[in-house]
Image: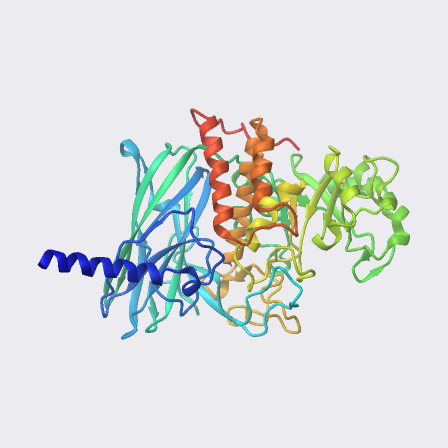
Length: 557
């Protein structure tokens, strides 16, 4: 009889846990099941000890979300790639947690292989309150989630270069958790290029004054590497950080080229961080504020500037910014572009390609790089397609200020998938080769406590990093969850590019378009995206009986 009672109790618990796991009742997310395979053993909550579970990197976990019963996660990664996940620490309803810390062990793999915990970076996720939220209308298909507390800023456990403990106004560890609240920890696993493929296992341990808990990680390493040279060309600006080499390194670690770096740092950043582009500041006078005209420079003036850079950098000049209202200046823009090319600087224009800007032929348009908003794409598609198929021109996309109701956005209060699918899958589907952000440090007066800049109802607009002074990192920056997902999207782009170079372009683009065909047709289901990524990774893995050579996937500009 005792055996039957035990089995009955076990069955009741299983049904109870399965009911609680219903996505509609738990974490605010866009998914039903995850290709970051999760298992759901029964977790008995102790009345006082920390409750812990594990999440993928595509789900915002909010302060008061109910417990999920995930004690293990299965991840997939290429070599030379970062793969994230989250550890959620929850305080019991009956008491607070104090002196909490989280550690992750080495990952142990086949035949004694391992990935050292030195390749694992932990951050405490910092919540910010969104007061108004991004503007929206009832006709939109991509709707912001509304006001509330959002995890966005990431506070590193230790100094990124010295490994020393950090202290500041906001400290990562140890931390406390109020009763019933959640505290997510973001974890990045970097897989070195010399890692043997196979399955690796690690354990994450949560300790506190009230007791301990643990969760488990399985990392499957595919037998290929992401190339050192990024295929997606991505740039950003940080006005207050133009002289900060640590900030430049952080951007490059997230697959973004800072527009301007110190000249003395160029060679080191090229060699160690794959810096490959730099901006030459040569404004034409025309921009979003007006259609003024500076005199067209001489070729020698341009050469004087371009000659003062490392010879293997791709130099460009964003000489006309958001100038779609300056239609009368078409010939002026063509003249500027011609001089910039002659001076070894690639002209970049931020507008859509009208017929007047297309020039006499595709080698003499108003720009070599066209940065285009999603809201302009449909009307200009015919000329955009011409630029994409032309070997001397590139099309990039950018999307600030929530200017339409359908495309993916980069502000805090949209589903996480927005910051990843925009450039990774949609960019590849449409033939783009680049991503542009106008700014990373457009901070409110105190970005650690206020998500919205004064007079702008767009939380996080123009800032995807946080100043390091408040966390014991003067001169450094702290990344955001959104910046991590921008990196993940760039890595998705790379998977598709690798398959193109392996003769599998149609297969790769079919997969990309199945989740992100264009700015109107894209999934908000994170699991659909992760299934697509796994299909791409599995295909590359199957095509390679041994790891790819380091340069096999490099794209020649």
